[in-house]
Length: 104
Image (cartoon, rainbow, N blue to C red; front, side, top):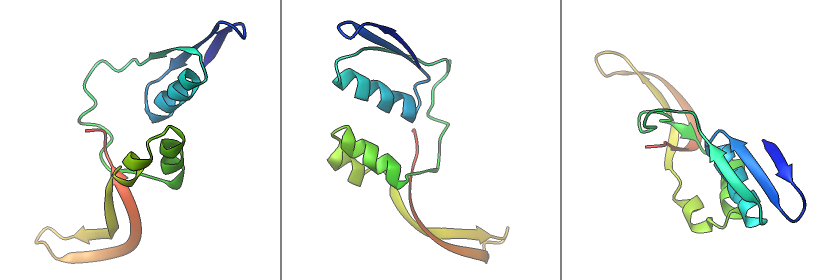
């Protein structure tokens, strides 16, 4: 991130609008900065980011941004992973509780 300006006229350029970039921009904006976010992706994000695991840090930043109620609904609880054979039989299991989400 490139920072330009004085304490009276603080401007920030955030390069990359993924989750970290957007949370950074929101935090700076709330602190009175003039913020511009630049993202290079030239297509829809709906087909990307499936199965993003929501870690405790993501929930913490959502709360810090004032999205307490959204933090509880940010994804879907998954009790674990299963591996299936081509005929549908379970060939492996891993108990791994997580909350997963996606962009689209």
